[in-house]
Amino acid sequence: MEEVMPEMYKELYALQNKLEKHYRDMQDMEFTVQEGKLWFLQTRSGKRTGTAMVKIAMDMMHEGLIDEKTVLQRCDPQKLDELLHPVFDNKAMKDAKLLTTGLPASPGAASGQIVFNAEDAETWQKNGHKVIMVRIETSPEDLAGMAAAEGILTSRGGMTSHAAVVARGMGKCCVSGAGALIIDYNKRTVKIEDVTLKEGDFISLNGSTGQVFQGEIETKAAEISGDFAELMKLCSKHTRLVVRTNADTPHDAKVARTFGAVGIGLCRTEHMFFEGEKIIAMREMILAEDKEGRKKALEKLLPYQTKDFYEILKAMDGLPVNIRLLDPPLHEFVPHDKKGQKEMAEAMGIELEQITARVASLSENNPMLGHRGCRLGNTYPEITEMQTKAIIGAAIQLRKEGFNPKPEIMVPLIGKHDEFDQQDDVIRATAAKMFEEEGVEPIEFKVGTMIEVPRAALTAGAVAERAEYFSFGTNDLTQLTFGYSRDDIASFLPAYLEKKILKVDPFQVLDQKGVGQLIEMAVARGRSVRPDLECGICGEHGGEPSSVKFCDKVGLNYVSCSPFRVPIARLAAAQGAIENS
Ligand code: PEP
Ligand code: MG
Image 1 (tube, helix red, strand yellow):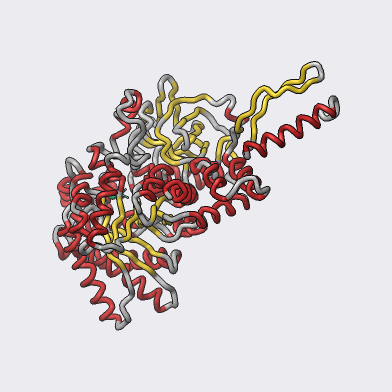
Image 2 (cartoon, rainbow, N blue to C red):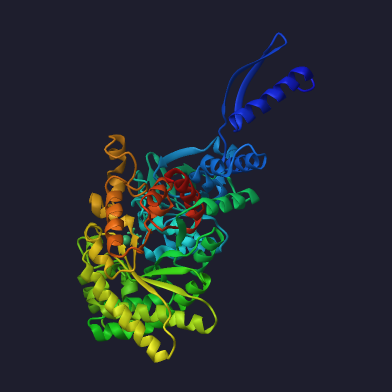
């Protein structure tokens, strides 16, 4: 146009600048030239990718067109995902065949060959293949396979299922609860409508939308720019609520720290038990018939736990690390297959039948409501003792080496304050004994609790008499407030969304009217007893923008989310501070 009609071009150029300045935003303009006259037909704010969103906002701020607060409000937190995870190449998407859609459990794009179990995922990956692990659902035993895979696809499970939570922690793409999948582990096939795919066939996942595609689709790697870093600095300047991370490994902790996390809000200790030798000692502890046997196994676990806590406290030196005592139902750790049971019988020097009987006795009708959370520590205080010894032991060692460890010990799933108080007794007595035995100055540490049972929220005043902080476990709090199983919601969620009974998945977006009311009430009741009570959230909602803004509104001190959601939460927190002020 500049060559063919230079005058007209000059006019267009001047007008487009005027419009951009007037609206203070990038414009999507339509114009026509008719009989030598330039006509503007329409102008509106242009759509943009995540990368462009950040660049445009920062450029306009540098040009003096918009101020810092406008920059923050202009940027959509969810779109930062595009800067942090691989995305599909737009050109490659043209011919993509959509097979089905599940839940967008962990963002990013991934392509690879189908494998059906963790062992194969590891072997294929070692042999140079990119794989997608396809499972009905995942369990802690699948961790190594999940780490080896490009992405994870499950037919069952909600947004807080094992697959979803672990994949988000790893920053790995995951689609969960894709109910249309019929998986046959024996034949190594997966049928989706009229398409049957077998082991080795290519499949592609979009974890941000839940879409599952047939074949291989090219992906583009994430790019973090200087504009992004500058945007994050602006977030810190305007925020009130700080962002911690949910991390169980030093690696995840370091990643989150580079994204600006100012501590660990939840370290799920159970995730530490699945590597190598640890699982054998852990299983021995669970399968033990009596306290004596348990203590023997716990002695073996102590050095492993101490090392794990040492590493994670070191990675987060100077920042608070909130370590949760053992939480999940014990039977999740026991071997359910014959091979694993034989291995345990040999390791423990007892008959296979004894193992089989113990595994059967641990099975529960409703594991989520069964022998888990603080019920474990209250029935077997020796577990709490061992974990406290490991945490305090690691902190003492680090202090000797000149580090500044800041441990926090968290009791999960309490409903009655007595459940907390008795654990608090065990923790404090164990710690005091350790300081005395080691002959060292006591290291400061806090003992707090998760609020994830509605009764705990209702009686928060009594809980805060002794609990030094609250962390809202909104995965369980949502499950127990709605009465929806967090692992089975995928079976009725699509119908509920279609019928508009639910507007959104409450495990993704905090239900402010119901669950939120419990949070607000618990904060108020807790602080009426302990005015400086620190309150945070560590459920999956801690990385969801509208939930983060709600947390700011009700006066929480921090949100905690998986490492790759830290920048999203930081932006949402800054927006919340602006909107709620
Ligand atoms: C929760 O319930 O919100 C929580 C963080 O704990 P978990 O998901 O491990 O049960
Ligand atoms: Mg929980």
